[in-house]
Length: 205
Image (cartoon, rainbow, N blue to C red; front, side):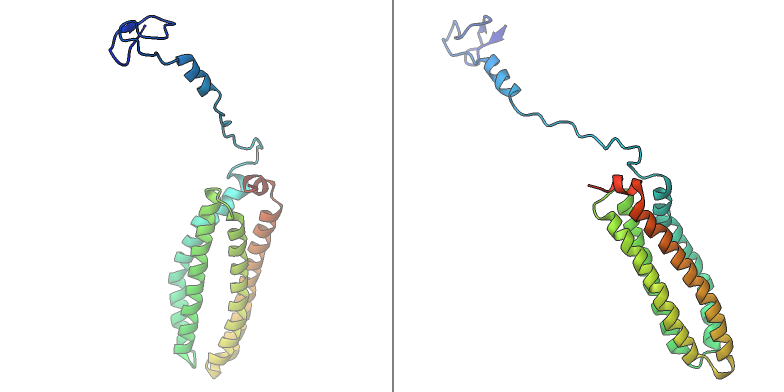
């Protein structure tokens, strides 16, 4: 039983007008039919591939970008300050050497921030996340190569005469090890981002 919207009287079922005030009764069936004809969007579904989502080696790579590398950078600051203090004592141009060292640390800090952002984008499966991750790897390798050759030239020019050969030899040994680690890290993860089925499925859209 429904009621008239004008006078409030009860209206029998299937009636077209109100028996009291003769007002027209809305046709509920037509309203329901018109509503049923509206297009309904299909429910969103995630890809059915078992490789979709953050997991496996991808999770390890992201963890390295947003946790391990920032922590390692912070841990290195104390060691770097001690090394810088000793190096300036035997440098013929301590202020230039100090400025170069600070500049490289600032570049490393900017790279850590960029890598952290790329890791967050990967974790949240955002567009262009893989692009930024690849760029972070490329910038890291480029910085390592530039730091090595500029540093080698700087050590040769700024070291005192009595310490120049020892400083160059030490820098060559440590620098080659540093370049090897940077190249290995870049090669492994860059190839992973290119060939990984999980990366392709997760970030294909």
